[in-house]
Image 1 (cartoon, rainbow, N blue to C red):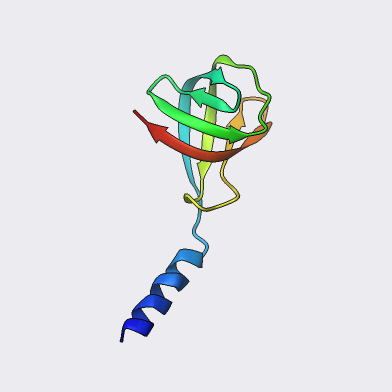
Image 2: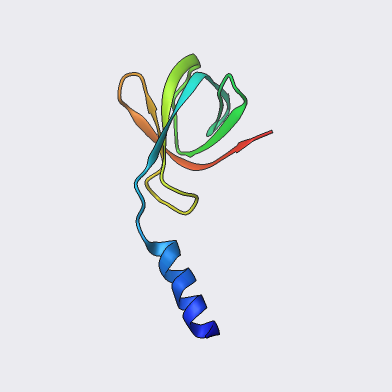
Amino acid sequence: MIVKAVISLVLLLFIPTSPEYYKLPSVKRVDQDLYKSFDGLYVETKLCYRYTYGEDAILKWNGRYSGDNKIIWSDDSSCQVESIWKK
């Protein structure tokens, strides 16, 4: 019984889900690979060299362990997102 539960949990972790999109208003660069939206959401990126001081963006979020998370800028360029949090 426990084995079935563990296998079910592992399978759920690896089932692809459709991404969610969030509007990020007035995103500002706080530090290297760290951005903050007007509503207080912090976005940690990987090797993102975008210098922005209040640009709106879109967050594509496919789950915490997805390698497909990204922030999409108004010119359709994007940066890979490592994590997000809100204080």
